[in-house]
Amino acid sequence: MALKIANREARRLWLDAQGLSAPPTGPVDLAGTIRKLGFVQLDTIRVVARAHDHILWSRNQNYREPMLEACLARDRHVFEHFTHDASLIPMEFYPMWRRQFRRMEEKVRGWEWHRGMLDEAGRAAIRARIESEGPLSTKAFDTKIEGKREMWRRPPHKLALDYMWYAGELSTSHREGFTKYYDLTERVIPKAVRKPAHADDAQVDWLCREALARLAFGTPGDIQRFWAAADLAEVKAWTEANAAELVPVEIESSRGEWTPALALPDIEARLAAVPSPAPRLRLLNPFDPVIRDRNRLTRLFGFDYRIEIFVPEAKRQWGYYVYPLLEGDRFVGRIEVKSDRQAGELSVHKVWPEPGVKWTDARQAKLEAELGRLARLVGAADVVWRPQSRH
Picture: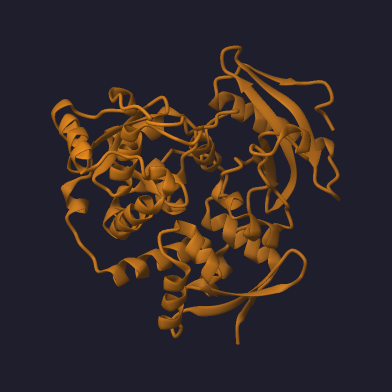
């Protein structure tokens, strides 16, 4: 019989697995936090703070933005590559990421918009420059788009750098601002993790086990989407091959429906030990790993959330960049907040409680405390509530 996991316990397992149970305080162990998460997604948008910084700050509010660049460029505790998007991944995972280099190289070759990249000789010339000059960004090259200029088209050198980065031939040395500098992989990735080679099925086994450990429980689709480094057919084959070891579970949704899923053998121990989340109110980033899989989010929390950055302004229900509000193990609302770093100001534009949530004075005080902490992250001296922002 499948182990039945009630909705509240399922929510708590998921939040604990993703580092959102304990109070976000204490010494910063950045490499350990990223290892627990599996990876941290990178994103250019900075309405308040960039996604990667905000995600890490949500786990420990002593985190500050320069720490991540040091983790990448100085300490080499992480490397940058592609999960479902550009991400920073623990360096010790590198040997299990080799198949992803191959998969991404094959995908890039098939992408229509990469057909205009430099040929082998052109790519060799880029590599030779990087080898002699050191890490270079796209700004160091000057190839031009031939033919009709269209919004999605990029110069051949940018496509070539992308291709060599996806294939693992080049690696991210560091970033200045958000500009990526490429270097030869052998000069970025330590030999100790660059040299080991593992069979393809061993890499798939690792990807599935490590995904399930960080999910606490999941369907084959959940497991596949976690890293996006294996195909669904490969994941399903893995679950079938390991059926005797995996624990069948049924997860109760927020609506009382039951979904079959799988867990690792330690699931009962994890259930017995799962803590109640800290009762503070947290302002999460739209790209937070707990938010990212919208179907799982809706299923577990009954929280219907979509980011509307690509929605025309007139058609937006909420706003361009609206943040979910998590209190304990429940999403209680969403907020539109922006920072003006030059003015030293964090401004609140609107707060929307979720249906059925009473916005009490105590809850308002929790929100104001969280906004004060967020202001310190971005160097804002003041939190300003715009007209009509208060509920």
